[in-house]
Image 1 (tube, rainbow, N blue to C red):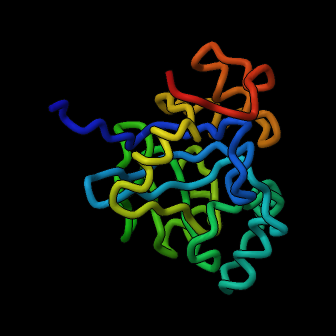
Image 2 (tube, rainbow, N blue to C red):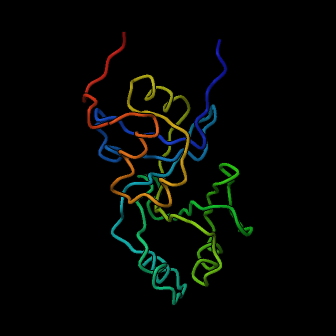
Length: 187
């Protein structure tokens, strides 16, 4: 029997056949994947909020206009009131999970306070909510051809416009997702 293949630090790219409106044309960064399940952050869905709105709601003040006007993403349908910061390594914050040597996920207020003062990570993306899969659920979706998977490219997270991330992530695999059919099968 083959050893399990875990997909932490990979993108899940929704195939055109994905019917779940939460993930249709979605790109999800898998932060953690074990035998017990998986957790990820959608990285190509804009929320109705700017980071300045979120900071104000948390009583965090900033004079950095570029930060205040930064988009906040919808990270997924689970706990949409909870904030997540995907970022490059930097200082040490209270609740940080290291995804890879070049990417971390922080859920504590101190990273936002540092960002508001211009002392945060060099590159970051803020999202509300996350995507979660129970034991075996993601594996089943992969067998059902719901997703393409490819290793994370930080340029897609931090440099590619949100509306181009779906096609750009698929291009990492040499795939033009617009040419794929909306149905799948097994040989």
